[in-house]
Length: 158
Image 1 (tube, rainbow, N blue to C red):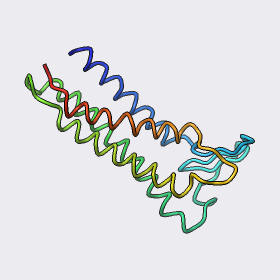
Image 2: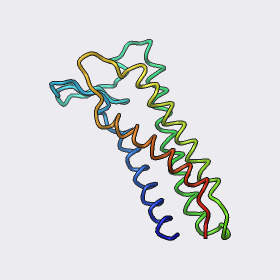
Image 3: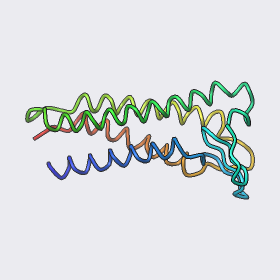
Image 4: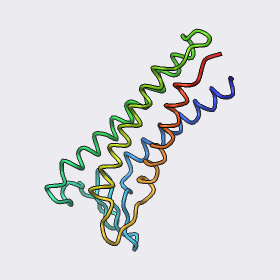
């Protein structure tokens, strides 16, 4: 049981780090030449970065702000879930489940789903570009956060 709890903790920390990297880096989209990339914060061409809101259509500003907000909320809920897991490790009685941790991780999962889905729908189909590593990291965090949320709901402290 100790090995399972340690593995869950390691995966949870990894999801938190990957989610932070995916949110803060500016490589969600790249062009084939490799001289342009776009994230949710900045648009970079040949090493010169400007605010992404200056580069996208004005009608897309609310969508980009929603993506930014959901990704920040996902980080916050993932961190709260990690703190709740550590607290519940020491306070839960034997046989109890990690419901609070699982609930917080499920909210993190929903925030990632909303943020990445909005980005995919509004910005992911630009001609001549492909989804870069931050976009892929966000989807990996989406999958892992769902698995963690389910694990926390099922896992009992023994």
